[in-house]
Image 1 (tube, rainbow, N blue to C red):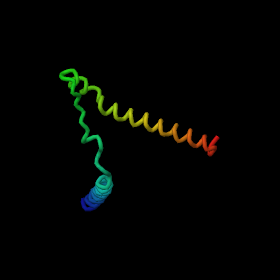
Image 2: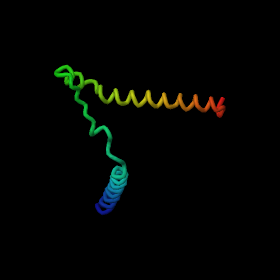
Image 3: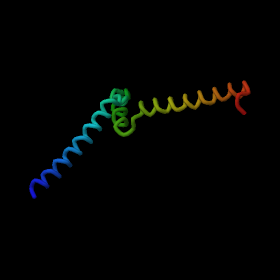
Image 4: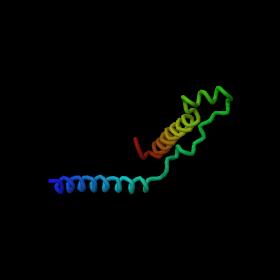
Length: 88
């Protein structure tokens, strides 16, 4: 009876090890997070240090500007295509 239980436990352990190996291989392929190298400190003295603990203002500003730029590019391309009568 012990050999059957040991075989089942060994199979389960092998399956878990295989899953961990696959997940580790996939994680090694993915690039590092771009948020690891961001400078999140505000140069506003004590106020900036305290506010940046709760709100990541530099990162929020960066993401908002990228979002607004993407929307602006969309409208510019759409206007050019309408001007060329490529779309209605």
